[in-house]
View 1 (cartoon, rainbow, N blue to C red):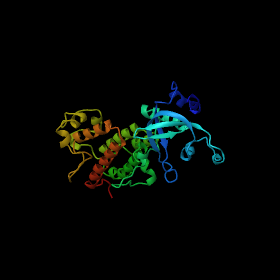
View 2 (view 1 turned 120 degrees about the vertical axis):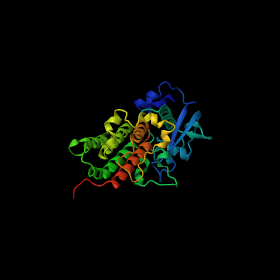
View 3 (view 1 turned 30 degrees about the vertical axis):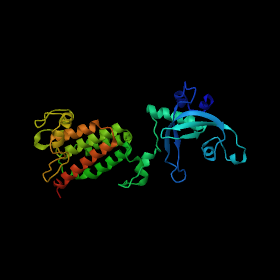
View 4 (view 1 turned 45 degrees about the vertical axis):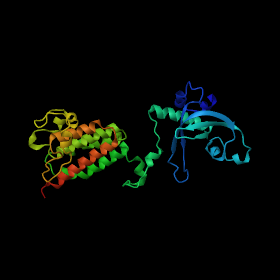
Amino acid sequence: FSGLKGNLSEDDAALMKGVTSAIGRRIRLRRIPNPERAPDVAQYIMGTITGWKTGILSNEEAVNKEEIDDDVSHRSPTPVPIWRMALDDGGELHITDNEIVEGLVRATKWTNQHPGYIERDAPFLSYRNNLGRFCGRQVDAPSSLTPLAFARQMLKKEQDLYMHLKSRTLENNWGGKCGSRNAWVASLKEYGHTFEAVRDGLLTLENAFFDLTGGFGTNGSSSHDVEAGEQTTESKLSGKDLLYHEVSRFDIELESLGNNVKGLWNNPDTRAIFREIISVCETVSILALGLDLICRNSQGYISRTKSSVVH
């Protein structure tokens, strides 16, 4: 087993340092069930190495062994080490020496959540069901919930709504000479692959749309007041307190409904709860729901107000 570790990279070899035997070790095996029709979809199997023997590889096992060349059919079978893997789901597999070394490294990274380790061909990324389908391009479906895909969607939604909101305000601190909009777009294009960047970008977009829709009007509260945590006369509780309050969390409606829509949010409590949810969320799915809510409220404001542009 010690000789098998010589083919590992320097980083992977460091993970296997001190491991003198594979028996009893956890292993994560990677197999491609259908290499012809779905070469980019792999199957990951967890198990434990229980032993090894010297034997002749079967035809299926010989295909998985990387050292065997195209002339294998013209050579007599040579005994090689075969490792026995007990599967977590029951049963066992016989695997080659290359598979065991790679599987041990993969299991260590997967178990310890090693930085930079990701299984891009995991089957759940390509999962489909009969209840719904991805409405975009099929090639984008596996990556539709990544921060980068969300950043692109956010840029598109902002572009669709900005011109309508711009024509309904006399004070624009988002686009034009202000430069805030250009800085926001540049930030998403450069750092949109990280979750923290798109989460902050969504909060920035909400702040911009809040100002473009006139804030809370005569209530005297602005976007800067909410960001700084200042209390308004209508709300003496923070967004966190409102969110976990047994009464307010059910009574406050986040979506702007009815014909009397005068801004992005109904009241300061609504906005405080929304910003608290987005600030503490940890998944792109919640950010996508937040973006959809902002867009619906903005569209409701656009539908019920007149443009300030003089024709």
